[in-house]
Image (tube, rainbow, N blue to C red; front, top):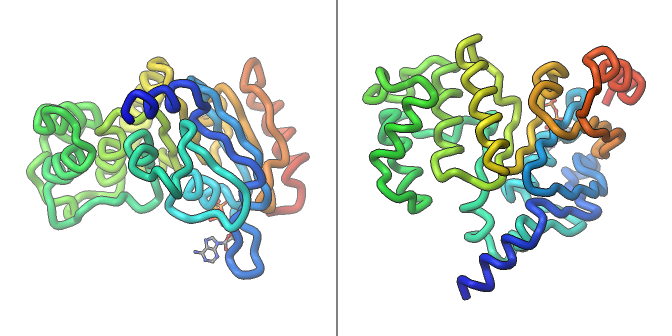
Length: 247
Ligand code: ATP
């Protein structure tokens, strides 16, 4: 029932997780996380290596299954309604999720068609322009530098204009120009009332774009605050206090 489906999506929070847990053998990578995000929120998660940030993001992206707890995305349980969840989600991950043997344009065309984007050719060209790759549109992705692949994976993740955007260290490998481009894109996305969750090690990057900040240690959200008027120095102080000796 499409009507019921869109009402569910409209009235439900983009992310609602309770007691979310993901174990790898004895390791509790994500350990009982409660998280609710409203539309227009931009949460940045900081934390030391091995704290569980990527695993949390992968769980929200439905790439790994939680061992315990509940998760809904726009009111949908990913285990039952993966299609509804998938088309509302965009993930910028460590691995670019790109096809090296296809050109940049063909990669974007492929994902545009996969997501049933209207006029996929026009949309692919629009995204190539946004991420500054128009001149390399016909080159094979396996010949791209790391930063160029990262630019394209940003285009891929945003091609279907997702309502919830998940970003894992999205600035990795980007030059100054591309970092500015990404900041602009993130502001645009937030301006449209979309919801974002970003994982980064760079306090500055998180502080300048987010509405909400969290620090994760040992699989748990150990500290959370509104970004508001928090200064870089204050955030660093909290970070050092919370993280202390390590993950
Ligand atoms: P980093 O900042 O180094 O990227 P992170 O906070 O993103 O770290 P995760 O990658 O989520 O941390 O890892 C959390 C814990 O889960 C680590 O102890 C890691 O070794 C473990 N882990 C993650 N993925 C796997 C896996 N596929 N198999 C086994 N253990 C895993």
